[in-house]
Length: 322
Ligand code: SAM
Ligand code: SF4
View 1 (cartoon, rainbow, N blue to C red):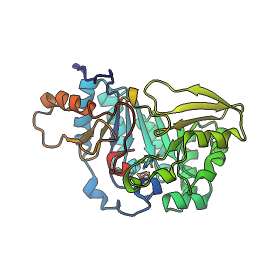
View 2: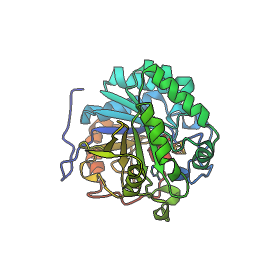
View 3: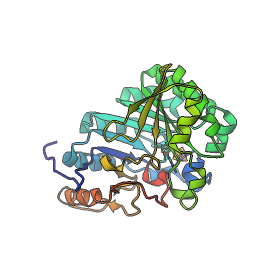
View 4: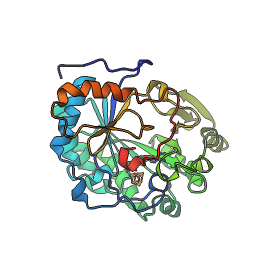
């Protein structure tokens, strides 16, 4: 990696984390993501972007930005046919210091040890309920048992794990405490996400939003909480209970974190986005002199970032990458 460029905006923000969406397909139909609609299923093959294509894009981006981290996401990234090979390429051939992955956990049981062997550094497991009826209500799938087995096998494989729970009013706010106790007793940190104004709920998300204060209030009724703060460029405000249960809140609405955001997104069709709010990406496919053009594309992408707060997007996270 011989050629780093200064790509930054007027707030001094730089891209240091790449979220790479490896596929837009998914085997769940989560309420907050696709409104429970089965609009996202499709023939897997059609979406199988080649490993070499991802390799080329990430290599060229890293050459310019000196990335600290790549997070693999989707859609469901464990449906990508060569996910372990991709992780190995990112770590060994491109030299990305930290490679992580966000998954719904449905295929973890089968691939946990392969993921560890390929060099995966950490994993975020989306778990919105520990009660099977609520799990179904959120994901439209009866697959909680498989997800819990996958979690267990990931821990046994030595994968560093965090849980993510997106909270929606009328759906899973009953799960805030049970999930804290489930994760805390296993020494796994959990983060609660405020529902974001995206996709299916773009027009009417407010009535489903459970705020940071409400989440804290539910937890502090039972537990004494200590604030640990927010690390630079992190999305999460961290807390600890007296028992040592670690939890965070990603409060996109209540406590926006745009001012030091370092995230860049690349979707599975090779479209770059500098901000989740932006509906207009920069397609890389078909650019012949990518190496020459990419610095100016990245400079344009960084100007897409919001100055203060996320303003919503009609695009769903399943396509742009969560
Ligand atoms: N399929 C994988 C999964 O579910 O973990 C990875 C992709 S999914 C789009 C990643 C994350 O996006 C989900 O865990 C969820 O937290 C988040 N997400 C999707 N839509 C959201 C919304 N409207 N508000 C908040 N978070 C959302
Ligand atoms: Fe699929 Fe993840 Fe979206 Fe749920 S949140 S529908 S698991 S992409």
